[in-house]
Length: 526
Image (cartoon, rainbow, N blue to C red; front, side, top):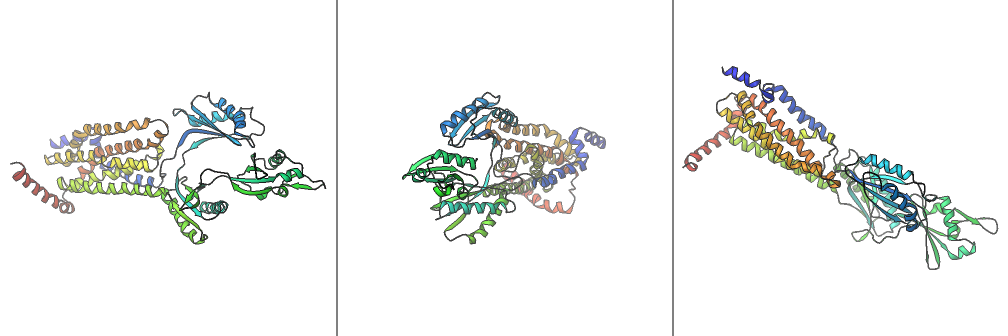
């Protein structure tokens, strides 16, 4: 009769099926553990999540134009073209000398890539741009996070520091594990062309003529800001690629003897920087930052180590009055957060194993404790499908779940242990213990999930930033539920309690239980 009852129990529901089919439970456990381990090496690692910002930037160069001319010729036309598009939340613009920038903020509910294409189409239809205006550049702004910065500083000219920083940037890009390096804390380069008034009078030239000749020769150069200083007229031209020496041989006019007058004969040409209200200082000396970013599958720690190795080699090659230092290494915070997760997980494993081993039994404590790595590693299987990386936010979510995911396994395991103490067989105890407690455990997990669900619906950039918390939490809780109701009962139903190893491990528990029962009988109960 008992055997018939046991067979009836085994045929009821998914819990009973998993208890009966131990191979299925073990296979599911292996998928979560080893699949998660394999996937963990392929998941993108970054300090903070990178995402598009729902902001589109439209840049239109207009060489030689004043801010007022940029506003009238560029800004107003672009604003009128994009303001009426569906999905546009706000339009702001800024007119600079030689260029205009229009920033379009999008609604969070729209398809941003489709809307970017619509904006490009509308801007391309504009026919009222001035003839000298260049082709508009429309781009979706992305949040790109740098990992570490190098501060290059010393008592040298900004030009010398800039040239050395550019060489270091080029060397860093050649290092394995480094892809993107940019210079920061330095004004844009410009080429200053000083034309004395005496030379203008001698060759019967005007600044407009010189500016036109320069533009005809170097069409990408905005040339047009004129200032007078100490009897000289200064013509400033901003340049992104060329050097001042490249302008020496630009023909300007013909001399009275029939020869060609070149720009280098009548003007002083220097490589310099735009005037800026602020200057970077590091350790009391002028400085330039060299920012290193993580790209693709590069890891923050890997990028930082590659930069550190390069800096160690660079130190001996620098002049005595030049220094270089690592600054704001964000990988340190990332590694610390990763180590905190590992430390908390290890501490949780040890505490659960000790406490359950003392109060219940070591075998049960082992299988309950195994639920922690199963839940964490199992989550790694699904993170790529949710476009979620391992970063400061997702690691924080893992740390949150560490104190919760073991609760359901403890409750289920304790109930199975109680059924066995009542005299049921291992299989009956596993099935009944898990089935009795299944609904409370399910609703407890659902309550935790619902508590984090609102973070999925936070709008704007903040929503994209914090959306990884509920993504991680929900997956971990669901896998923890699967492990506690299906994998754990199967393991407890087929464990062999008579093995010598388990007997030795249970001796401390038996001693502790004896002392605890004696305390209850003689001290607590009376």
